[in-house]
Amino acid sequence: MKKNISIALLTMALLVQAAILLTPHHNTLYAENKKIILRNADIIEGGQLDGASSPDKQFRSVIGNVIFEHNNMTLQCDRATEYPGENRITLTGNITITGNDLEIHADNGIYHPDTEIGELTGNVRGRMISSNHAAKAKKAILNNRTNQLWLYEDAIAWGADQQISGDIILVHLKETAKGGKRRIDEVQVHRNAFFAAKDTLSGTPQLFDQLSGKKMVIRMNDRSKISGVTVTDQAESLYHLYDENRQPSGINYSSGNIIRMLFRDGHLVRVNVTGNVEGKQYPVSYRGDTSLNLIGFAWREHENPFKNKKSLP
Image (cartoon, rainbow, N blue to C red; front, side, top):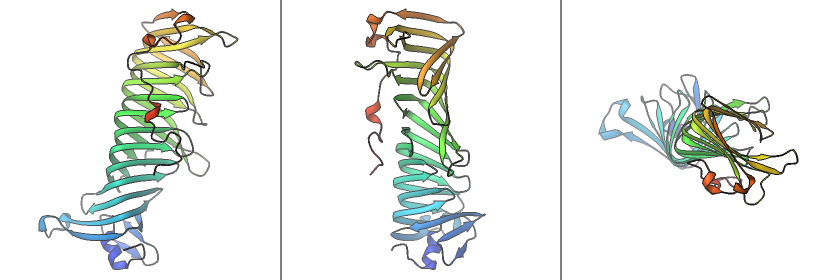
């Protein structure tokens, strides 16, 4: 059954949770002033759980090439099932959520229409379509109203020659003035926070400036480039030094309560360390010595699911 289905069958396929009003010329569904538009489905079915007659035990499903819209988001999946009275829609198989420059993929999920919150599991990966920022994790929560994306369990994100990892990554988005698109405004990393950036002056072998600690806050400018990184609690840094002629002059290791790195056009220009400061300077001969890397460093660019790809299949 394709998009041109009868109004009666559309009523079965409504992914909403209260009394429903239908508009005859658009597959538009209304509930508590929130609308979901079903764009496509191959099969529609409904029934009752455990043979119960209570409305709360009923379900409605749409199966195959499912596409529906809610506010500024488009949701696609293999199957979507609504359970009346529970304020939730289960999503299964090849989930894609897009909206305002954000694109997220997952295997399974639950969407709450009343709060616009999506809970995603199974090979979660997302990106900002117009930039090279991407991320992956085992679990994620998208709060469309607050413009927040939470990534859990082996969370890792990539930017231009930069990598962020930790137990939990919170990405905060901000709507831009142009076309209502969103950009990344701030990133927070909680527990085992690690930031690594390619040293763009190093040539071969490739070297990496590094920063780690318990909590990390990364600020982004209006051009989606990192403007500053602040790490608190057990903060450590390792970065490569150059003279005024951009010739290597050594390697610096520092630790303290708080470390701040400042960037200009995505390049490291200044490092501040405060509280219980300790440091060590290594000569140029140590360049490329991997034993200097901070504990937990691993460059995982090959895991980026969007690397050299315009879109996922």
